[in-house]
Length: 175
Image (cartoon, rainbow, N blue to C red):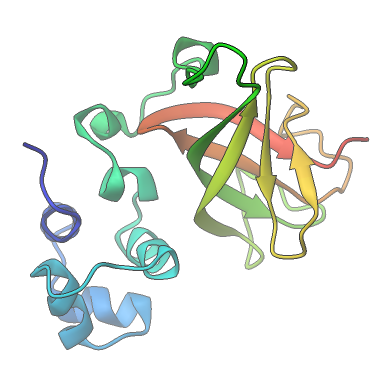
């Protein structure tokens, strides 16, 4: 049986050799808030999970994934674990992805203050073999499989984990 999210947060904090107080300072919350989530007193929202991941310097997938999600730090091909449709004629398959975002000319490998990380629902198109992720603005960005170092100044994001497994592919607005 896999650990609860609170147990995973506690384990990641201990692995980082930091106290609840230090983690709370990194996250901009109180020590009591960290304790509440670690002890299972509340289920973290997506925003709070992102804060924990940033404070612990781990991918969100490590906190919410199963045993396979513990492969953080290793890259696997996206083609090794595509979502399976429930029905033969199903075109769009829902999945959850861990997304890293950046703005303008900031490289995803050398992020600046515009860097962000969050968990987002996504849809996988089984016919076109692309993913789409919804943004707050309602616009949708498609997986263009571009080189992350060559974004031509466009904003974008790189998915680091999906379905509990690490992955290496990007989402950009189609050129």
